[in-house]
Length: 58
Image (cartoon, rainbow, N blue to C red; front, side, top):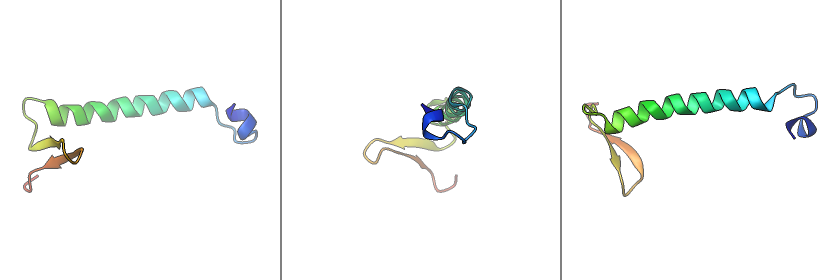
């Protein structure tokens, strides 16, 4: 499908998607460790605003 939309784009969908998935998994692991680890380094999750919060010192 990607070749139909961008015939001269020289992009291969599968390698690009696999690379993006690896990046997302790595980034998610970092955020998960910050929020749920035993030493969460002052980071937390605000349920109401749905975002990461940190102490001012961080």
